[in-house]
Structure formats: structure tokens, C-alpha cells
Image 1 (cartoon, one colour):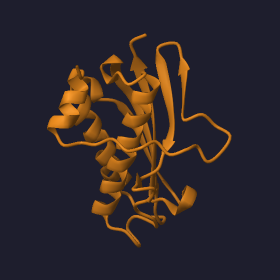
Image 2: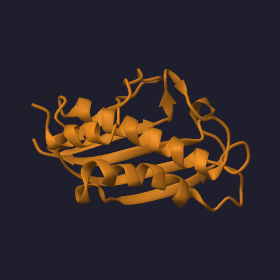
Image 3: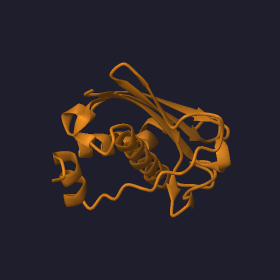
Image 4: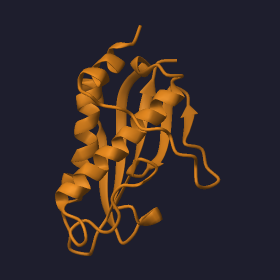
Length: 156
């Protein structure tokens, strides 16, 4: 029987993406005690980066928020893999770190990252509330507009 988080995903119509292969010499996630560190996730959709370019230039704020949500879905998919498919083992979303490709002077990185943060609360409830950093950068891998990494506390 599916756990309560899986039921919440199904009831909300949220489908987690297939996990892309790592494109470098790193792990998609790593454990340190009861913490799992999830590597930065890009906004993949249907096998490709869904939104490329800079938020506030080639892309709207809404595009950035949607991209951050896609990154959040990928984070949850990685955590599910780390937990052997048991998302109910997630005790807390501890921290998200987000990077937004934009020009100097763009100051809405926190609004963009709300796409991922709001998803964590939607999926995990109060344990989905977390600390966060939102940083603007000139470019990201594969010309993605957003990248988000995460730290989760897991029941062993």
C-alpha cells in the first residue's frame, strides 16, 4: 500500500519525473548520518531542459517559478530513490539552495525559488518548510534557467 506522501502526490495529480543520469563525476545524492544531500537538479521535462535562458530576459518570472517547481519535482524523485521508494521516511526538508540565471539587477530570485519551496510544503506539509538560499548567476549548466539542490532529514 502506498504511503501517505505517495497518496498526497497521487491526489494532487503530481507525477515525479524519471531520474536523469548524472552528467559528471558526482553522485545524485549522498548520505551523512540521517541527512541526504541531493545534488543540484535542473528543470528536466520529457528528457530535455524545459526552460533555458535567463529569467527576466528571455523568460518571464512565471517561467522561472515553473522551472523551479520542475527542479523541486526532481529533488523529490531523487529523495524517493535515496529512501528506496519510501517517501514517508522523509522527516524534514531541511534546506533548499537555488540558483537563477539572470542579469545583474534582477532581484526576484526568492520569488522564482518559491516554485520549489511551495512544492515541498504541498507534498510534505509542515515538515516541508525549510531554510533556503536564492542566488542570481550569469549562467547555469545546459543553459537551464534554474538549479535547485536540497538537504533532507530521513528516518533510517
